[in-house]
Image (cartoon, rainbow, N blue to C red; front, side, top):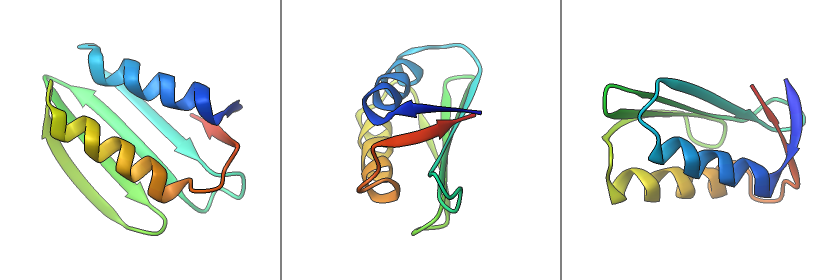
Length: 87
C-alpha cells in the first residue's frame, strides 16, 4: 500500500472507468476504517463501499451512471481527506 494525494486518486479512478482491462483498485483512509473498492471486468464495474455506507453495486461500462456513482461514493467516503492509501 502506498499513500497518494486525493487528486491523483481521482485521476486513477477516471482512468479505471475508461479502461477495458481487468482491474481492482482499493482506496482506504488513513485509519483504514473506510474504503472504496472498484473492480472492472468484462464490461462491468463493481463498486464496493465500506464505511459510512456498506453497499455493493454493479454497473455496465461505459455509462454515465457508473461514473456518477463512483464520484458520489468517493465524496461520501473521503469528505475531508487530503491523502488516501492505494491498494
